[in-house]
Image (tube, rainbow, N blue to C red):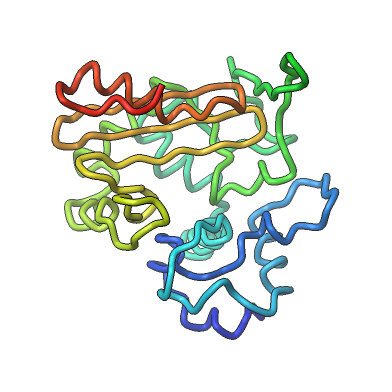
Length: 247
């Protein structure tokens, strides 16, 4: 691909830790885009860019483009589409029957919740934005029970061995937030690792305390408020001395 010249030095580690410098595709989408993008479309947008945020490995800037490219890498290496890879290698082996990578027109999501966005003094139902079909950085529908199964598998060798698990949960890159570093897909802060995410009508967070073997998951089908503080308050109920966070 004809990516900006600086991209020649990008590694998988750079993509995993948001230190590649690649422009976030959401910042360069055409205004008024209504057609859903796929991961391959993200590559197409990046091919049109003439520069990066910084030289690979010389900084940190959250960019969903990196994870869209990682999905394409998985497809090339496995010989199957990314949604099918997730189904075969993660969801089915772990018994995650309520999880799938969903795109408009694809298999239906049983018993799902629909998102809601603020509108004036009320809420309207919203679902599936132009970026919702990019699966490398999101697009997975799941449930609390399924996420508990996935979390449990991160403590043993069903998904990763010790060496890869240590790599994933190590804070490789300093982020913009004081005391927070970024691993391979995880924010690392003190004795916790966590990540949050949002899309139209939804905001979610998962916080793990590996030493205490406690995980708090908050899934919300509304785009406000940000649920991280709530998850920290829930964790404080089970971890004496743990800061509750703002209310």
